[in-house]
Amino acid sequence: MVRIAIDAMGGDFGPEPIIKGCVLALKQKKFTPILVGKKSEILPLLPKRYRDKISIVDTDDVISMSDSATDAVKRKESTIYKATELVKNGEADALVSAGHSGAAMTLATIRLGRLSGVLRPALITFMPTVNGTRSVLLDVGANVDSKPEYIAQFAVMGGCYARGVMGIKEPRIGLLANGEEKSKGNEVTKATTKLLTNYKGFVGNVEGGDIFNGSCDVITCDGFHGNLVLKASEGVATTISFFIKQYIRKSPIAITGALLMRKVFKLLKKEIDYAEIGGAPLIGIKGCVIVSHGKSNAKAIQNAIFQAISFVDADVNAHIIEEIAILEASKEV
Image (tube, rainbow, N blue to C red; front, side, top):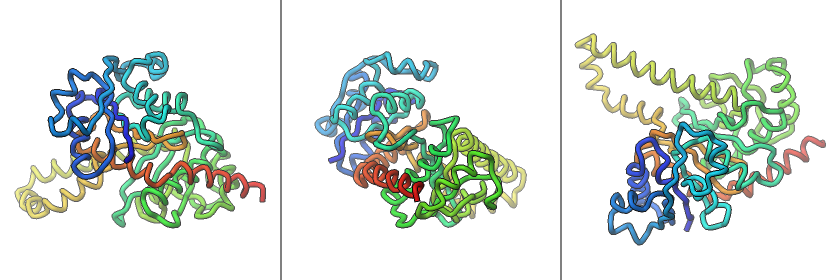
C-alpha cells in the first residue's frame, strides 16, 4: 500500500480537519497514513477504531506561516521536516502538507532533490474547462524566474502528470503567450518554442482563454506568470460569486430563479472549489509532495491524499525521467 506522511499540524485550523480528512480517505481507499505532529493533540481527535491503522510520529515544533521558508531547513524537529525525512528515507512514498507552502517546497527541493535530468521542480494547479475536464497549469509559483529550458521541462512534466494521473493518452501541450502566432511572445517564450517544436503533443503558443476552453490539456509558463494567472482566476471566481449573490438579493424574481437553479449553483461551486482538487503537486522531485491550501477542510485533505495515491500508483516520476531524456534528444535533431 502507498505510505503517506501527513503534516498533521500545518493547516490554519490545526490538526482537526487534517485528521478528519485522513479518516475520510481511509473509508474509501487502502493506504498507510503516517501523521506527523503533537501526539497529545492528535490522539483525542482520532476515532479509536482507526488508531491501529494510523501511525503517529510525535513532534512539537510547527513551522508557522509567519516563519521564513528557510527556517524549516534548520528546524529538524518540525513537523514538515520530519515528514519530508520520512519520504527521503523511504519510510513514506508521498507527503501531504497544508502548512507553510514555501517550507514544504524548500525542504522537498533540498532534502529530496530533483529527479535525474530535471533542472527545476514546478508547482501544478488545475483549472476548470468548459468541457467538464480540468487543464494542467504549471509552474504556478515554485520558480519566479525561469529559463526556456526550465519552461520546456515543465511542459514535459505536466504531460506526464496528465497521462499518468488524469488518463489523457495524448495531452495537448501549449505555451502560454500573448498570442497564438509564432511571432508573439517575449524572448523567453520564443526560445522555449524552439525547444518544444519537435516534442510530441506540443501545439505551440496558447492564450489565457485556452486555459479554460478545453482546447489544451497542459499549459506551461514560468512561475511568475503562472501564479498571476492563478490568483487572477481565483479573484474573478470570487467576484462573480459576489455579484450573483448581490443581484439575487435585490430581485424577488431572481430569488425564485436561484431557488430553481440550486443544483446548477451547486455544480458551479464544485468546479471552482479548491477542496475538490485537494492540493498542488510539486513535480520534478524525488518522491511525491502535495501542497494543500492552508484553509483546507477535511474534504480537501481527503482529495490531497487521493491525489498522492494516484501519483505514486501511476509512477509519474519514472515517466518524467524517460520523457526528459526524449526532450533532450529531440533538441539534438
